[in-house]
Length: 96
Image 1 (spheres, rainbow, N blue to C red):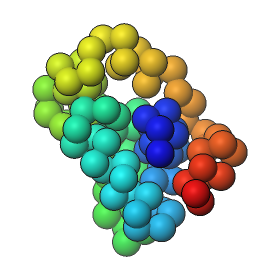
Image 2: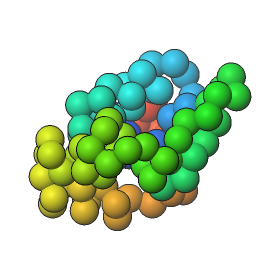
Image 3: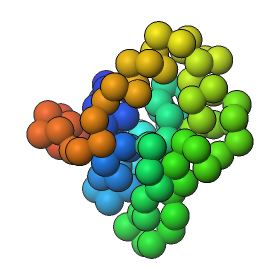
Image 4: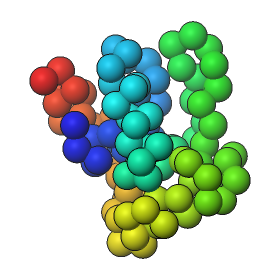
């Protein structure tokens, strides 16, 4: 799954509501600094709060600063342009 797809699923909250492997893939991308938490908080399938990128400390996993540290400013800017609404391509590609 591409970083763009993961980030869109994270932003829309769908990453935390679809099949388990989708959420795990998105969480690995966050932990690697390839993606950041979404601009808004969401609840997962079990009702647990998934914080927004603004709810975590700067420089920690899920924050914009963590992405910049691991992948650079340009990558962080690209991620910020990804919409919060689920893209059809993201939902279709997660089935592959």
